Length: 85
Image: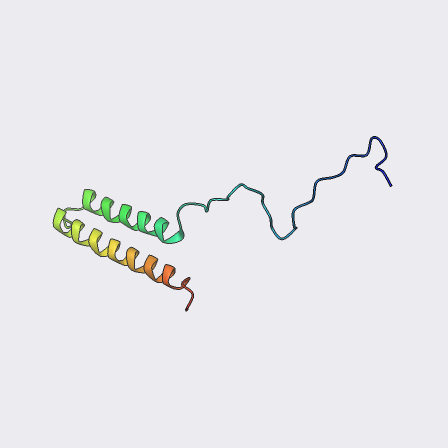
């Protein structure tokens, strides 16, 4: 049986399993730890600028400690996503 005139065959539909096509979705940059890191660092920065009790040495030490804590929290977050082989 022939296809009647005017009826064009439809292209196959993609599966409905969350198929998005050839466009890749990028994750949203940033995370909660980064927001807290920036907020706490800004508070330390303000204390350094405003207060005479916090000098440049203490500011540097607090920044290093804060950065170490941030890196440790990101490492724990990424390690929790690793699948055991």
